[in-house]
Image (cartoon, rainbow, N blue to C red; front, side, top):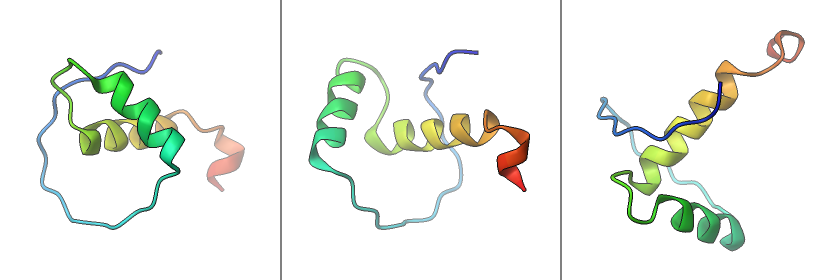
Length: 59
């Protein structure tokens, strides 16, 4: 299944994370003119990555 952006509101916890500037720029370009925040994009991308990992890598 392809990664699709969607508005999402859940209980959250603040975390500090550093991103390479080129990645921040790519994310900002991707979410521009969409109803998705930077944080929401990162959360959805992480969930997608975890849901689509090979089962051998999960162990």
